[in-house]
Image (tube, rainbow, N blue to C red; front, side, top):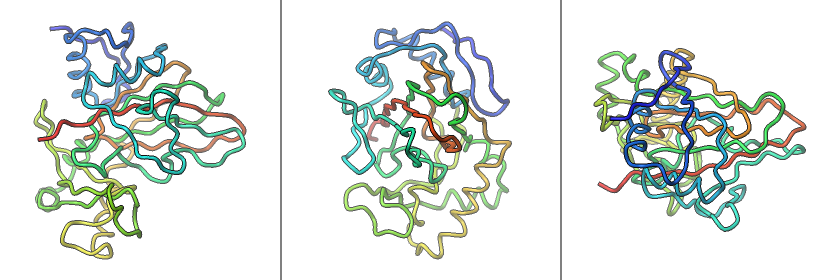
Length: 266
């Protein structure tokens, strides 16, 4: 079986994969090797890639149904390939897409996202890194009592976010603990951006525990920080990671392309 050569970024999360050109034409052996490497490291960095928008979508489709985001303010669909989103911060802008909280993508759907693929197009000379957190290691570090409690909980995830009524179509319920289908490891599946409460609890009752999970999962020892280079592609397992784009730069345009593969319905 093909095995990718990887260089870990930290002992707990992230690895760099060199000498592999990503394309829609990769064989199943290579795609399976990417799946295995992703199960071991959760975040994979591929330097010096140049897929066009259609190739990015078609490569992502090897892993699952490609997500088409509903129309909303700030959501920019690539022209002709709407499954690919343009994550843009203009030189005169303040908002960086997704910078309000650590989160996982598309947890407001059931099934949710399997993985996301992000390709750097335009970047500031420095800054604009992305943080990633390993929710498997975070679950492992919980006390047995908290692990048992987490396994009993289901969370309501809504695109509307905290303090708002559930979105009429983009709302889903997920167990707080998921099991990885390849490694068998358990990880936390909850995030500040979309999880509004636990099933059977009020938002006020849920808030302290959601806050605890958020602070716990994003402790430095569970995270890595990816610095971007033009052409770089990053793939992450959306089921067992959180991510956070760091919005500390001004005066420069930042543009990345994102495509997301969804889990298959069970």
